[in-house]
Length: 494
Image (cartoon, rainbow, N blue to C red; front, side, top):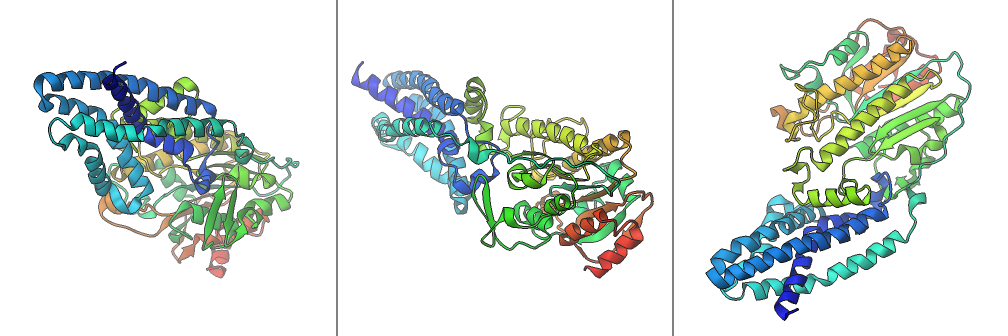
């Protein structure tokens, strides 16, 4: 092999490796605190697939580089430069995404500008030096391939399954004649956009039906504007000012282990009753399993679970990731859309099953709708939207309404809807509502249908949802059984 061929080969494989830098970053550089939100540790297959993709994509790039070299000799740099710039696009995309993630202050515009300088700079060098300069940069970075290979082997030899394992569930107790509660938290459900300022062509029949038979609060606000703080505050009944995620199974609140704080789950377990959780984003089954009779949870879309799966699945998804940027993809469906669709389908089934199980006295459902990304198309009732941006929030509201209807249907078929107290609320407002209609509002919905309730009751006083835990505990203890009693309780606990 000539020196030119060897340099071209090293340059091609190095460029392929840079194109997959986002994949390697997810596999090798996930900070310990971020592993708290991951469902499982990465398996060996994605590491092997990444190395295979470096070789396969590198071979493609090598052919292109050889073609560009011939075009350069025959027609000059004007013929070869477009060919070279074309194969640098995946690397540019990967660098932009990595810099935007790791250096947030740089922003998308700054990331694009910096990547453009890095990628195009070599192509703008004086004529006759394009290949030498470009090859020098890529050859300098080529040892990264060996480093990543060594780190991958070391990572695969370390068994981390125990760190990500769900805890052991509590034993179920015999079910008795006691109050039953289902608490549904729709993530980022916004009061204003769901009710008074609803889009004119948006129908939410299940929310409207429940409002007509519930205690309906029109001035409810949440403990925080993000899920980590708000949901944990709601579950503990205490406004948590600081939460630190340490690793896959440990987090602290104000320096105290999160698992040591009393929650509504520990209250229900202490009463000798059965609780269940179907949730997303937070690792419920790691944190609270000892107080739960049933549990399931799903992690949010992220760069790591985009590329997980068997070797063949990882090989294909990693290659597809070269043509995607976050939620934007030239493919349909994108990796993120596929993950979201599977999660919605699984959580709908889990929610229906738990809500309709008469042996469960308390059920907590933390559902991903109407939180972004907004892939759901309310007109076709499919996950086919290519644009998943904030403007499509009404479509996700329709998805949340559909999920509420599915849960109600399962409870009705089981004969439990009328005899169960059902609370529908949110962890926080829609933080991107200004991009929907130019307005913003701190309020969230709060619909409390007590067991046996069939008529509307209004509650217009300010309501801080931090009171949800003690409110539901009072209901579970049979201290509140009517809308009138609930109003009096809320007035006494502002």
